[in-house]
Amino acid sequence: MLLWRHSNPIFVATLAGGELAEAAGGFPAAGEGGPQTGTMTECFDCDNCKESLYGRKYIQMDNGPYCIPCYDAHFANTCDECKELIGHDCRELYYEDRHYHEHCFRCFRCDRSLADEPFTCQDEELLCNDCYCNEFSSKCIACEKTVMPGSRKLEYNGQTWHEHCFICSSCQQPIGSRSFIPDKKDYYCVPCYESKFAPRCTRCKKTLTKGGVTYRDEPWHKECFVCTGCMTPLAGQQFTSQDDNPYCIKCFGNLYAKKCSACTKPITGFGGGKYISFEDRHWHHNCFNCARCDTSLVGKGFIPDNDEILCRDCSNDL
Image (cartoon, rainbow, N blue to C red; front, side, top):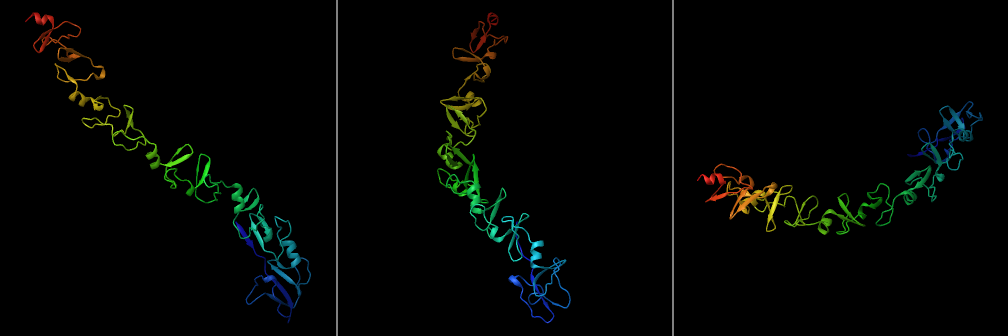
């Protein structure tokens, strides 16, 4: 923090009956109604050099009065810039245990006075705000102007933008704190990117931003990829198709699959299921049995008997 350090008030000592003297240098006076003076009837000397202070300017310290030369020699600070004493009649600035004459407190680069200006200390060097920004602050990749300290900015991939300079390459609106999608050297807000580049669902025609499924090389939302018959979601489930339309196993079996002549259930062929056909009738592999003894007829000879099939032994018993 930068502080101004004011000198102690200067007084003038007078003998008894003497006229009142003005305080020097325009500094505030002690007491009411103007500068403090003493009406001396006894010895009044400088606490350091012991010389009489009658008719001379002096500064009153806690331990006694001091003539001006002694005060400067014992109490004045040394300017960190010019290394000379900061006399009682100088305005003094104090910053981080260092003292300066007002005219010595200047920017290290442009020599501008920093007494009433914002400044920064960089590597023990005092810099005005403009010089600091030009040398150390990043520059906006869009407008090539300095990004001032404390201003709102956006950093991405080692580059910096003013907040108002980081805009969507399509709609030209500031992206701000919203999500964005980079595409080579362009940056897009999410709505513009989706409208321009994202695939669209085959069913609802809306853009797919994440996830989805592919069927017949076409993109679908997971919630849009459903059975044509019962509308059950098919993502992650077994399904088949009929005339390019997807169906769950149950709907496909009920609508299109052959029916087993024994159990009347659909023969879908899923799960490694095998079936047997004879004339216009069909059986599940494990349903192709003799109607009398229930012996499996798979790979064996059989005798059709009206709607039934029989093994040779049962046929001979008829």
